[in-house]
Length: 400
Image (cartoon, rainbow, N blue to C red; front, side, top):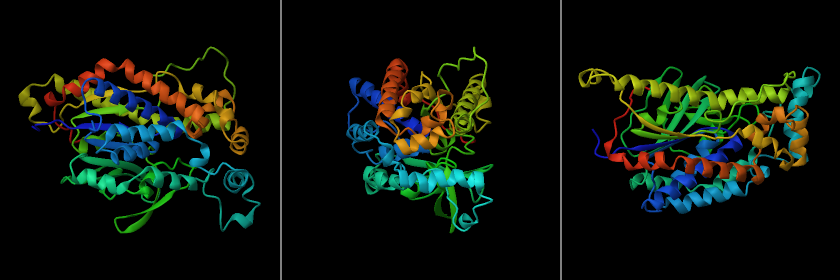
């Protein structure tokens, strides 16, 4: 049994919805500092992220030696976001990617000139490379791991080439890679390419090549085929896990009192993305709770015969529907992007789910940050209990 229980942080995917995470993290840090926690101290031994959550996770890990000031810099980025920082939002950029891509879907059989060089995605996320290079200090991450300020960082992505879900992890500890059905772990030096791959929303952003185990593979968003989002944190040694979701777990249900209309393309796409980003974390939380409940009724002798061990978990997720919030801010998108999305119904309220992942505009991200702050404060008692009981915890659940 460990002398000090390791706390893991799991940040889920969701594109622009990840603004909610930094609001939660800011309030959690404020609660801890009020309780006497040193502002520079990193509360999380293990940080794991997927998709846009991987970007937040890596940015946090780069500031593990000076946590609260580093967190404020991340909040500043999200509070001042514009879509142009993530993808080409000018008319020429949208024509080259989105309009061309939609035209190819409709008339590709007529447009033989595009056969040799077809568009790769709806949007061109080249600007994101510059943003990541400005946000991240990767040598500082290396130093934090060497100095023991952080135990491990993990970023997940999905290999289109191999058809597998991969967790890339970086740690100074002797942690063996794990292998499960259709998901594997690879020890790696985390770089910008891993974040671009993890955040490559399918069809919307292009796949990213990564040299993995001696060969080039193309990767997309880590939320795809991610059947156990909490698992990497546990494999890396977490005894307690704080999970910050990006929707659906606690949000109110959709009003179904009116007759439904035939779904638009944007509504279907938004539904598909929500299935990718939101369903797996809810299922994994249910599974972990069932394991904990089952273990609680076993005798001490029975527990020694199973590799499964209980994991303490705290989950914080939006209390309001982020689709509804997004519908109020679609007009803030650059006009070329708004016109592109309008063509498939994303400018309508019922198609706002798709827009909620692409609304990298400060009017929207600031509202999500404020919601995250509010929701975390509503969990103040649980947060204090979660962190104060650190020395009374449990060991890892090795087979999750």
